[in-house]
Length: 72
Image (cartoon, rainbow, N blue to C red; front, side, top):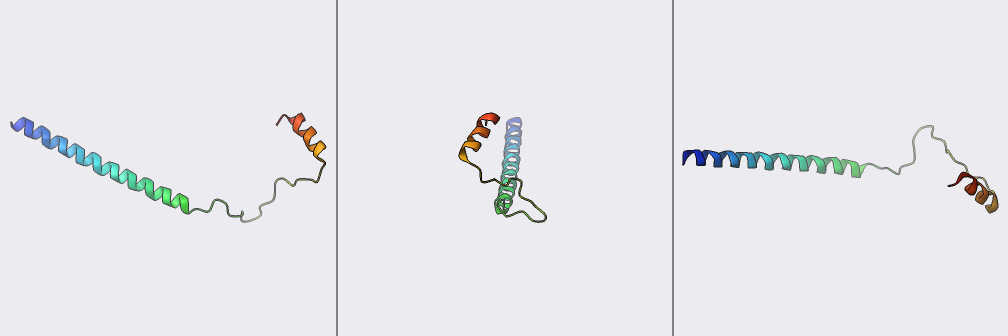
């Protein structure tokens, strides 16, 4: 009887520790998610940023030829 009671207490301890650790992990993930959601990903760049591509006003046939040549 004493051995069975001891095993039950150990099982309850393990379940409580598992529940607490799982809850802490969930809360940590929620905090990280909320911080990531508040970041502004689409703000214009700061500093000395330059535009990488400046499209030229070209004919559609020239653009189609380049499209076929590059295989894009």
